[in-house]
Image 1: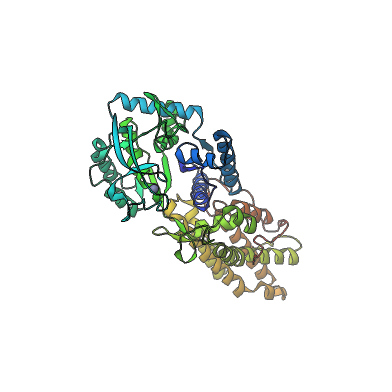
Image 2: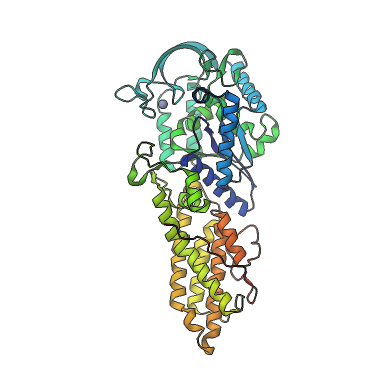
Length: 506
Ligand SMILES: [Zn+2]
Protein backbone atom coordinates (compact mmCIF):
# COMPACT_ATOMS: atom_id res chain seq x y z
CA UNK A 1 0.00 0.00 0.00
CA UNK A 2 1.48 3.31 -1.11
CA UNK A 3 0.51 6.95 -0.86
CA UNK A 4 2.28 9.84 -2.59
CA UNK A 5 1.37 13.27 -1.21
CA UNK A 6 2.58 16.48 -2.81
CA UNK A 7 2.46 20.10 -1.73
CA UNK A 8 2.76 22.84 -4.31
CA UNK A 9 6.31 23.99 -4.84
CA UNK A 10 6.57 27.49 -3.52
CA UNK A 11 7.84 30.55 -5.33
CA UNK A 12 10.98 31.75 -3.60
CA UNK A 13 10.53 35.42 -4.50
CA UNK A 14 9.36 36.02 -0.91
CA UNK A 15 9.92 34.46 2.52
CA UNK A 16 7.91 31.44 3.68
CA UNK A 17 4.52 32.49 5.10
CA UNK A 18 1.61 30.92 6.92
CA UNK A 19 0.01 29.61 3.72
CA UNK A 20 3.15 27.62 2.86
CA UNK A 21 3.37 26.37 6.45
CA UNK A 22 -0.27 25.29 6.37
CA UNK A 23 -0.21 23.13 3.26
CA UNK A 24 3.04 21.47 4.23
CA UNK A 25 1.93 20.76 7.83
CA UNK A 26 -1.36 19.28 6.59
CA UNK A 27 0.60 17.09 4.17
CA UNK A 28 2.76 15.96 7.08
CA UNK A 29 -0.31 15.12 9.20
CA UNK A 30 -1.76 13.06 6.36
CA UNK A 31 1.59 11.33 5.95
CA UNK A 32 1.82 10.43 9.64
CA UNK A 33 -1.77 9.23 9.61
CA UNK A 34 -1.26 6.95 6.64
CA UNK A 35 2.03 5.64 8.01
CA UNK A 36 0.23 4.78 11.24
CA UNK A 37 -2.19 2.79 9.08
CA UNK A 38 0.67 0.84 7.52
CA UNK A 39 1.08 2.69 4.21
CA UNK A 40 4.42 3.35 2.57
CA UNK A 41 4.65 7.12 2.07
CA UNK A 42 6.29 9.62 -0.21
CA UNK A 43 5.83 13.29 0.67
CA UNK A 44 7.31 15.94 -1.57
CA UNK A 45 7.53 19.64 -0.89
CA UNK A 46 9.97 22.27 -2.11
CA UNK A 47 10.56 25.36 -4.15
CA UNK A 48 9.98 26.70 -7.64
CA UNK A 49 13.17 28.47 -8.65
CA UNK A 50 12.25 29.64 -12.14
CA UNK A 51 10.29 32.46 -13.72
CA UNK A 52 10.30 36.18 -14.03
CA UNK A 53 9.32 36.93 -10.43
CA UNK A 54 12.28 35.04 -8.99
CA UNK A 55 14.62 36.58 -11.53
CA UNK A 56 13.43 40.05 -10.54
CA UNK A 57 13.52 39.31 -6.80
CA UNK A 58 17.22 38.39 -7.09
CA UNK A 59 17.81 41.59 -9.05
CA UNK A 60 15.98 43.68 -6.44
CA UNK A 61 18.33 42.35 -3.76
CA UNK A 62 21.33 42.91 -6.01
CA UNK A 63 22.25 39.22 -5.74
CA UNK A 64 23.49 36.76 -8.37
CA UNK A 65 20.55 34.45 -9.19
CA UNK A 66 22.19 31.25 -7.97
CA UNK A 67 23.18 32.72 -4.61
CA UNK A 68 19.67 34.12 -4.22
CA UNK A 69 18.08 30.73 -4.97
CA UNK A 70 20.39 28.91 -2.55
CA UNK A 71 19.56 31.40 0.18
CA UNK A 72 15.80 31.16 -0.30
CA UNK A 73 15.87 27.42 -0.67
CA UNK A 74 17.67 27.09 2.66
CA UNK A 75 15.18 29.46 4.27
CA UNK A 76 12.23 27.30 3.14
CA UNK A 77 13.92 24.07 4.21
CA UNK A 78 14.65 25.53 7.65
CA UNK A 79 11.01 26.52 8.11
CA UNK A 80 9.74 23.07 7.17
CA UNK A 81 12.29 21.47 9.50
CA UNK A 82 11.15 23.76 12.32
CA UNK A 83 7.54 22.82 11.54
CA UNK A 84 8.39 19.10 11.94
CA UNK A 85 7.40 18.42 8.34
CA UNK A 86 8.99 15.06 7.57
CA UNK A 87 9.20 15.39 3.80
CA UNK A 88 10.86 12.62 1.82
CA UNK A 89 11.84 14.74 -1.11
CA UNK A 90 12.67 18.45 -1.26
CA UNK A 91 12.07 19.80 -4.76
CA UNK A 92 14.41 22.26 -6.46
CA UNK A 93 13.42 22.91 -10.05
CA UNK A 94 16.99 23.96 -10.85
CA UNK A 95 18.03 20.27 -10.57
CA UNK A 96 19.46 18.99 -13.86
CA UNK A 97 17.38 15.77 -13.84
CA UNK A 98 14.19 17.77 -13.48
CA UNK A 99 15.08 20.13 -16.31
CA UNK A 100 15.97 17.26 -18.65
CA UNK A 101 12.67 15.50 -17.93
CA UNK A 102 10.66 18.70 -18.53
CA UNK A 103 12.38 19.09 -21.90
CA UNK A 104 11.60 15.45 -22.71
CA UNK A 105 7.92 15.94 -21.93
CA UNK A 106 7.74 19.06 -24.10
CA UNK A 107 9.49 17.36 -27.01
CA UNK A 108 7.07 14.41 -26.90
CA UNK A 109 4.06 16.76 -26.97
CA UNK A 110 5.66 18.86 -29.74
CA UNK A 111 6.25 15.71 -31.81
CA UNK A 112 2.50 15.00 -31.69
CA UNK A 113 1.80 18.40 -33.26
CA UNK A 114 0.03 19.70 -30.16
CA UNK A 115 2.35 22.68 -29.68
CA UNK A 116 2.14 25.60 -32.14
CA UNK A 117 4.14 28.81 -32.53
CA UNK A 118 2.23 32.05 -33.03
CA UNK A 119 2.18 35.75 -32.43
CA UNK A 120 0.09 36.88 -29.52
CA UNK A 121 -1.14 40.27 -28.46
CA UNK A 122 -2.70 40.56 -25.07
CA UNK A 123 -2.76 41.63 -21.48
CA UNK A 124 -0.18 40.07 -19.20
CA UNK A 125 -0.08 39.89 -15.37
CA UNK A 126 3.44 39.59 -14.01
CA UNK A 127 2.06 38.40 -10.66
CA UNK A 128 0.32 35.42 -12.26
CA UNK A 129 2.96 35.19 -14.99
CA UNK A 130 0.22 34.60 -17.51
CA UNK A 131 -1.83 36.27 -20.20
CA UNK A 132 -5.27 37.42 -19.14
CA UNK A 133 -8.51 37.54 -21.03
CA UNK A 134 -10.68 40.68 -20.84
CA UNK A 135 -13.16 38.67 -18.77
CA UNK A 136 -10.44 37.73 -16.24
CA UNK A 137 -9.83 41.36 -15.30
CA UNK A 138 -11.49 43.67 -12.79
CA UNK A 139 -13.71 46.57 -13.84
CA UNK A 140 -10.73 48.92 -13.93
CA UNK A 141 -8.80 46.47 -16.08
CA UNK A 142 -6.46 44.93 -13.45
CA UNK A 143 -5.75 41.36 -12.34
CA UNK A 144 -8.10 40.52 -9.44
CA UNK A 145 -5.25 38.65 -7.68
CA UNK A 146 -2.67 41.41 -8.22
CA UNK A 147 -4.62 44.69 -8.37
CA UNK A 148 -1.56 46.83 -7.51
CA UNK A 149 0.84 45.28 -10.02
CA UNK A 150 -0.71 46.82 -13.16
CA UNK A 151 -1.18 44.45 -16.07
CA UNK A 152 0.93 45.09 -19.15
CA UNK A 153 0.03 45.14 -22.80
CA UNK A 154 2.34 42.67 -24.48
CA UNK A 155 2.92 41.56 -28.03
CA UNK A 156 5.06 38.45 -28.36
CA UNK A 157 5.73 35.36 -30.39
CA UNK A 158 5.40 32.25 -28.25
CA UNK A 159 4.66 28.53 -28.25
CA UNK A 160 1.19 27.35 -27.29
CA UNK A 161 -0.25 24.02 -26.16
CA UNK A 162 -3.61 23.16 -27.71
CA UNK A 163 -6.02 22.69 -24.82
CA UNK A 164 -9.46 22.43 -26.42
CA UNK A 165 -8.95 18.92 -27.91
CA UNK A 166 -8.77 17.58 -24.32
CA UNK A 167 -11.60 19.49 -22.65
CA UNK A 168 -14.35 16.89 -23.13
CA UNK A 169 -12.01 14.11 -22.08
CA UNK A 170 -11.14 15.96 -18.88
CA UNK A 171 -14.79 16.67 -18.10
CA UNK A 172 -15.51 12.97 -18.58
CA UNK A 173 -12.67 12.06 -16.23
CA UNK A 174 -14.12 14.37 -13.57
CA UNK A 175 -17.58 12.88 -14.02
CA UNK A 176 -16.27 9.30 -13.92
CA UNK A 177 -14.08 9.94 -10.85
CA UNK A 178 -16.08 11.91 -8.29
CA UNK A 179 -13.13 11.75 -5.90
CA UNK A 180 -10.74 13.41 -8.38
CA UNK A 181 -11.38 16.89 -6.96
CA UNK A 182 -12.38 17.33 -3.32
CA UNK A 183 -14.30 18.99 -1.71
CA UNK A 184 -17.29 19.17 -4.01
CA UNK A 185 -17.46 22.99 -4.16
CA UNK A 186 -14.10 23.03 -5.93
CA UNK A 187 -15.09 20.20 -8.26
CA UNK A 188 -17.99 22.39 -9.35
CA UNK A 189 -15.69 25.37 -9.74
CA UNK A 190 -13.42 23.32 -11.97
CA UNK A 191 -16.35 22.11 -14.08
CA UNK A 192 -17.29 25.75 -14.51
CA UNK A 193 -13.77 26.54 -15.78
CA UNK A 194 -14.23 23.79 -18.35
CA UNK A 195 -17.70 24.83 -19.49
CA UNK A 196 -16.48 27.01 -22.39
CA UNK A 197 -13.95 26.20 -25.13
CA UNK A 198 -10.37 26.54 -23.86
CA UNK A 199 -7.85 28.87 -25.42
CA UNK A 200 -4.39 27.55 -26.24
CA UNK A 201 -2.02 27.75 -23.27
CA UNK A 202 1.13 29.82 -23.76
CA UNK A 203 3.97 27.55 -22.61
CA UNK A 204 7.01 29.67 -23.42
CA UNK A 205 8.61 32.99 -22.60
CA UNK A 206 11.14 34.64 -24.90
CA UNK A 207 14.64 34.85 -23.41
CA UNK A 208 14.61 38.58 -24.13
CA UNK A 209 12.22 38.82 -21.16
CA UNK A 210 12.87 35.79 -18.94
CA UNK A 211 16.09 33.77 -18.75
CA UNK A 212 15.52 31.86 -15.53
CA UNK A 213 13.89 28.66 -16.72
CA UNK A 214 14.15 25.44 -18.74
CA UNK A 215 15.08 25.90 -22.41
CA UNK A 216 12.49 24.67 -24.89
CA UNK A 217 14.14 21.62 -26.50
CA UNK A 218 12.88 22.59 -29.98
CA UNK A 219 13.72 26.33 -29.77
CA UNK A 220 16.38 27.53 -27.35
CA UNK A 221 15.45 31.17 -27.91
CA UNK A 222 12.68 30.45 -25.40
CA UNK A 223 12.39 29.17 -21.84
CA UNK A 224 9.48 27.12 -20.55
CA UNK A 225 6.53 28.88 -18.94
CA UNK A 226 7.07 28.55 -15.20
CA UNK A 227 3.86 26.59 -14.50
CA UNK A 228 4.62 23.97 -17.16
CA UNK A 229 8.03 23.44 -15.60
CA UNK A 230 6.78 23.54 -11.99
CA UNK A 231 3.87 21.11 -12.41
CA UNK A 232 6.18 18.51 -13.89
CA UNK A 233 7.95 18.27 -10.51
CA UNK A 234 5.23 15.90 -9.36
CA UNK A 235 6.52 13.40 -11.90
CA UNK A 236 10.24 14.14 -11.83
CA UNK A 237 10.37 13.72 -8.01
CA UNK A 238 9.54 10.04 -8.46
CA UNK A 239 12.08 9.54 -11.25
CA UNK A 240 9.78 9.82 -14.26
CA UNK A 241 10.43 8.94 -17.11
CA UNK A 242 12.01 5.88 -15.47
CA UNK A 243 9.18 3.32 -15.30
CA UNK A 244 9.58 2.91 -11.55
CA UNK A 245 7.63 6.16 -11.14
CA UNK A 246 4.37 4.36 -11.96
CA UNK A 247 3.55 2.72 -8.63
CA UNK A 248 3.90 6.02 -6.76
CA UNK A 249 2.13 8.01 -9.46
CA UNK A 250 -0.93 5.77 -9.32
CA UNK A 251 -1.41 6.87 -5.68
CA UNK A 252 -0.62 10.56 -6.11
CA UNK A 253 -2.64 13.19 -4.25
CA UNK A 254 -1.94 16.90 -4.76
CA UNK A 255 -2.71 19.26 -1.88
CA UNK A 256 -3.38 22.76 -3.20
CA UNK A 257 -4.87 26.10 -2.21
CA UNK A 258 -7.96 27.24 -4.09
CA UNK A 259 -5.97 30.00 -5.85
CA UNK A 260 -4.09 27.39 -7.90
CA UNK A 261 -7.03 25.22 -8.86
CA UNK A 262 -6.81 26.25 -12.51
CA UNK A 263 -3.16 25.25 -13.11
CA UNK A 264 -3.71 21.96 -11.24
CA UNK A 265 -7.22 21.22 -12.46
CA UNK A 266 -6.97 22.40 -16.08
CA UNK A 267 -3.37 22.88 -17.27
CA UNK A 268 -1.78 19.92 -15.52
CA UNK A 269 -4.31 17.22 -16.47
CA UNK A 270 -4.26 18.44 -20.08
CA UNK A 271 -0.44 18.47 -20.16
CA UNK A 272 -0.53 14.88 -18.93
CA UNK A 273 -3.16 13.85 -21.48
CA UNK A 274 -1.15 15.51 -24.23
CA UNK A 275 1.93 13.58 -23.10
CA UNK A 276 -0.09 10.34 -22.97
CA UNK A 277 0.30 9.98 -19.20
CA UNK A 278 -2.27 9.02 -16.55
CA UNK A 279 -3.77 11.71 -14.30
CA UNK A 280 -3.05 11.98 -10.57
CA UNK A 281 -5.51 10.23 -8.29
CA UNK A 282 -6.76 13.28 -6.48
CA UNK A 283 -6.68 17.04 -5.99
CA UNK A 284 -7.41 18.03 -2.39
CA UNK A 285 -8.21 21.73 -2.33
CA UNK A 286 -8.25 24.03 0.67
CA UNK A 287 -9.34 27.61 1.31
CA UNK A 288 -7.10 30.31 2.71
CA UNK A 289 -6.16 31.91 6.01
CA UNK A 290 -7.16 35.49 6.70
CA UNK A 291 -6.52 37.74 9.69
CA UNK A 292 -8.81 38.04 12.73
CA UNK A 293 -12.20 39.47 11.84
CA UNK A 294 -11.87 38.11 8.31
CA UNK A 295 -9.45 40.86 7.23
CA UNK A 296 -6.93 39.92 4.55
CA UNK A 297 -3.41 39.67 5.99
CA UNK A 298 -1.13 42.49 4.93
CA UNK A 299 2.05 44.13 6.11
CA UNK A 300 0.42 47.55 6.18
CA UNK A 301 -2.33 46.38 8.56
CA UNK A 302 0.30 44.52 10.60
CA UNK A 303 -1.76 41.33 10.92
CA UNK A 304 0.61 38.98 9.09
CA UNK A 305 1.23 35.77 11.04
CA UNK A 306 4.87 34.75 10.67
CA UNK A 307 5.28 31.00 11.28
CA UNK A 308 8.76 31.40 12.75
CA UNK A 309 7.63 34.07 15.22
CA UNK A 310 4.80 31.79 16.38
CA UNK A 311 7.16 28.84 16.82
CA UNK A 312 9.57 30.95 18.84
CA UNK A 313 6.84 32.32 21.07
CA UNK A 314 4.55 29.30 21.51
CA UNK A 315 6.35 26.25 20.17
CA UNK A 316 5.81 24.34 16.96
CA UNK A 317 2.88 22.33 18.25
CA UNK A 318 0.83 25.41 19.11
CA UNK A 319 0.97 26.33 15.43
CA UNK A 320 0.45 22.80 14.09
CA UNK A 321 -2.51 22.35 16.42
CA UNK A 322 -4.13 25.64 15.44
CA UNK A 323 -3.76 24.98 11.72
CA UNK A 324 -5.20 21.47 12.03
CA UNK A 325 -8.01 22.31 14.42
CA UNK A 326 -9.23 25.68 13.14
CA UNK A 327 -9.20 25.29 9.37
CA UNK A 328 -12.68 25.50 7.88
CA UNK A 329 -13.35 23.24 4.94
CA UNK A 330 -15.87 25.48 3.20
CA UNK A 331 -14.53 29.02 3.59
CA UNK A 332 -11.50 31.06 4.60
CA UNK A 333 -10.39 30.68 8.22
CA UNK A 334 -9.13 33.30 10.64
CA UNK A 335 -5.69 33.32 12.20
CA UNK A 336 -3.73 35.66 14.43
CA UNK A 337 -1.09 35.28 17.11
CA UNK A 338 -3.81 36.02 19.70
CA UNK A 339 -6.10 33.30 18.35
CA UNK A 340 -3.26 30.78 18.30
CA UNK A 341 -2.29 31.72 21.86
CA UNK A 342 -5.90 31.33 23.07
CA UNK A 343 -6.26 27.96 21.41
CA UNK A 344 -2.91 26.81 22.81
CA UNK A 345 -3.70 27.89 26.37
CA UNK A 346 -7.31 26.76 26.50
CA UNK A 347 -7.25 23.59 24.41
CA UNK A 348 -3.76 22.12 24.64
CA UNK A 349 -2.92 23.66 28.02
CA UNK A 350 -6.10 23.60 30.10
CA UNK A 351 -7.88 20.62 28.63
CA UNK A 352 -5.03 18.20 27.87
CA UNK A 353 -1.72 19.27 29.43
CA UNK A 354 -3.14 20.19 32.86
CA UNK A 355 -5.05 16.94 33.23
CA UNK A 356 -1.95 14.96 32.34
CA UNK A 357 0.26 16.82 34.75
CA UNK A 358 -2.29 16.77 37.62
CA UNK A 359 -3.01 13.06 37.32
CA UNK A 360 0.62 12.07 36.76
CA UNK A 361 1.97 14.22 39.60
CA UNK A 362 -0.72 12.88 41.93
CA UNK A 363 0.19 9.35 40.96
CA UNK A 364 3.90 9.91 41.54
CA UNK A 365 3.32 11.60 44.89
CA UNK A 366 0.78 9.18 46.29
CA UNK A 367 1.87 5.89 44.77
CA UNK A 368 5.59 6.02 45.33
CA UNK A 369 6.60 7.23 41.86
CA UNK A 370 4.50 4.61 40.08
CA UNK A 371 1.29 4.22 38.17
CA UNK A 372 -1.13 2.33 40.45
CA UNK A 373 -2.62 -1.09 39.70
CA UNK A 374 -6.34 -0.62 38.88
CA UNK A 375 -9.16 -2.50 40.63
CA UNK A 376 -12.56 -3.45 39.14
CA UNK A 377 -14.03 -0.91 36.71
CA UNK A 378 -17.18 1.08 37.46
CA UNK A 379 -19.80 2.10 34.89
CA UNK A 380 -18.25 5.60 34.80
CA UNK A 381 -14.81 4.13 34.08
CA UNK A 382 -16.20 2.02 31.27
CA UNK A 383 -18.08 5.03 29.86
CA UNK A 384 -15.06 7.33 29.68
CA UNK A 385 -12.86 4.56 28.26
CA UNK A 386 -15.38 3.93 25.50
CA UNK A 387 -15.64 7.66 24.79
CA UNK A 388 -11.85 7.89 24.42
CA UNK A 389 -11.71 4.94 22.04
CA UNK A 390 -14.58 6.36 19.96
CA UNK A 391 -13.07 9.86 19.85
CA UNK A 392 -9.64 8.71 18.73
CA UNK A 393 -10.79 5.97 16.35
CA UNK A 394 -10.82 8.54 13.55
CA UNK A 395 -7.02 8.72 13.67
CA UNK A 396 -6.82 4.97 13.22
CA UNK A 397 -8.62 5.40 9.91
CA UNK A 398 -7.72 7.08 6.63
CA UNK A 399 -7.93 10.88 6.89
CA UNK A 400 -8.58 13.19 3.97
CA UNK A 401 -7.53 16.83 4.10
CA UNK A 402 -11.05 18.07 4.74
CA UNK A 403 -11.53 15.58 7.62
CA UNK A 404 -8.74 16.94 9.79
CA UNK A 405 -10.61 19.64 11.80
CA UNK A 406 -13.49 17.33 12.73
CA UNK A 407 -11.07 14.66 13.99
CA UNK A 408 -9.39 17.32 16.17
CA UNK A 409 -12.79 18.48 17.43
CA UNK A 410 -13.62 15.00 18.70
CA UNK A 411 -10.37 14.91 20.66
CA UNK A 412 -11.19 18.21 22.36
CA UNK A 413 -14.72 17.01 23.13
CA UNK A 414 -13.44 13.87 24.83
CA UNK A 415 -10.77 15.87 26.68
CA UNK A 416 -13.65 17.85 28.24
CA UNK A 417 -15.33 14.58 29.21
CA UNK A 418 -12.10 13.29 30.74
CA UNK A 419 -11.77 16.45 32.82
CA UNK A 420 -15.36 16.05 34.00
CA UNK A 421 -14.72 12.41 34.90
CA UNK A 422 -11.61 13.33 36.88
CA UNK A 423 -13.42 16.12 38.75
CA UNK A 424 -16.44 13.93 39.56
CA UNK A 425 -14.34 10.97 40.71
CA UNK A 426 -12.19 13.29 42.88
CA UNK A 427 -9.25 10.95 43.49
CA UNK A 428 -7.85 13.43 46.06
CA UNK A 429 -10.87 12.53 48.24
CA UNK A 430 -10.71 8.81 47.50
CA UNK A 431 -7.10 8.60 48.68
CA UNK A 432 -8.08 9.72 52.18
CA UNK A 433 -9.77 6.47 53.26
CA UNK A 434 -8.39 2.96 53.15
CA UNK A 435 -11.67 1.57 51.85
CA UNK A 436 -11.68 3.91 48.81
CA UNK A 437 -7.94 3.67 48.12
CA UNK A 438 -8.36 0.96 45.48
CA UNK A 439 -11.02 3.10 43.81
CA UNK A 440 -8.49 5.95 43.72
CA UNK A 441 -5.93 3.65 42.06
CA UNK A 442 -8.47 2.75 39.39
CA UNK A 443 -9.42 6.39 38.64
CA UNK A 444 -5.76 7.39 38.25
CA UNK A 445 -5.02 4.41 36.04
CA UNK A 446 -8.09 4.98 33.84
CA UNK A 447 -7.25 8.68 33.48
CA UNK A 448 -3.61 8.17 32.55
CA UNK A 449 -4.24 5.21 30.28
CA UNK A 450 -6.93 7.24 28.48
CA UNK A 451 -4.49 10.14 28.10
CA UNK A 452 -1.99 7.70 26.65
CA UNK A 453 -4.51 6.74 23.94
CA UNK A 454 -5.16 10.43 23.17
CA UNK A 455 -1.43 11.15 22.97
CA UNK A 456 -0.80 8.21 20.67
CA UNK A 457 -3.47 9.61 18.36
CA UNK A 458 -1.96 13.11 18.60
CA UNK A 459 1.43 11.83 17.46
CA UNK A 460 0.02 12.37 13.98
CA UNK A 461 -0.64 16.05 14.68
CA UNK A 462 1.67 17.38 17.41
CA UNK A 463 4.40 14.73 17.34
CA UNK A 464 6.95 16.49 19.54
CA UNK A 465 4.59 17.13 22.47
CA UNK A 466 2.85 13.78 22.14
CA UNK A 467 6.18 11.95 22.32
CA UNK A 468 7.17 13.87 25.44
CA UNK A 469 3.84 12.97 27.05
CA UNK A 470 4.24 9.30 26.20
CA UNK A 471 7.73 9.35 27.71
CA UNK A 472 6.33 10.82 30.95
CA UNK A 473 3.88 7.92 31.06
CA UNK A 474 6.57 5.36 30.20
CA UNK A 475 4.20 4.15 27.50
CA UNK A 476 5.36 1.21 25.37
CA UNK A 477 5.64 1.78 21.62
CA UNK A 478 2.19 1.56 20.04
CA UNK A 479 1.46 -1.36 17.74
CA UNK A 480 1.32 -0.73 13.99
CA UNK A 481 -1.07 -0.35 12.25
CA UNK A 482 -2.31 1.97 14.98
CA UNK A 483 -5.76 1.87 16.52
CA UNK A 484 -6.92 2.94 19.98
CA UNK A 485 -6.29 0.14 22.46
CA UNK A 486 -6.84 0.31 26.22
CA UNK A 487 -4.79 -1.04 29.13
CA UNK A 488 -1.36 -0.72 27.55
CA UNK A 489 0.17 1.11 30.53
CA UNK A 490 1.71 -1.17 33.12
CA UNK A 491 -0.07 -0.93 36.50
CA UNK A 492 2.62 -0.75 39.18
CA UNK A 493 5.23 0.48 36.68
CA UNK A 494 7.37 3.61 37.18
CA UNK A 495 6.37 6.95 35.70
CA UNK A 496 8.92 9.17 33.97
CA UNK A 497 9.84 12.74 34.84
CA UNK A 498 6.67 14.86 34.82
CA UNK A 499 7.09 18.24 33.16
CA UNK A 500 4.58 20.86 32.07
CA UNK A 501 3.67 19.95 28.52
CA UNK A 502 2.13 23.26 27.42
CA UNK A 503 3.34 26.05 29.74
CA UNK A 504 0.90 28.92 29.81
CA UNK A 505 1.76 31.89 27.59
CA UNK A 506 0.26 35.35 28.11
ZN1 LIG B 1 -2.26 38.27 -11.44
